[in-house]
Image (cartoon, rainbow, N blue to C red; front, side, top):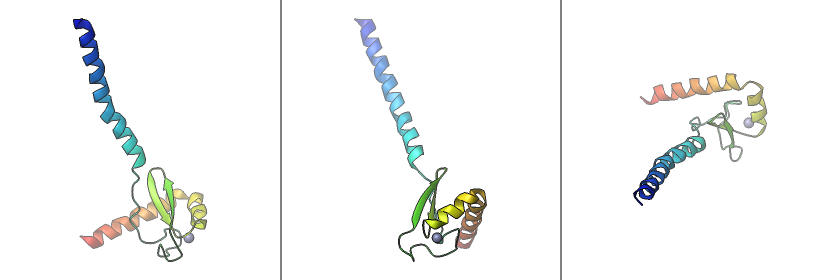
Length: 97
Ligand SMILES: [Zn+2]
């Protein structure tokens, strides 16, 4: 009887410990690094002026384009545009502080 009880407690403990871990993994997957710039990184045009921006997920990063066509240009050289985004974000941060 005692053994069954220990086993039950053990199973419950494992379930209890694993739940937050599973939640954390799902959370990590769902959370994208937000796109903080107000312009399309490909054309430099203001987002939202030509309708809703086109949102694209690139390796856990959210990128907003002024239109769908810009994704094609982005895909040609993602590293170049990511660098550009990071430079612009750094500039924006500097301007704030
Ligand atoms: Zn565009």
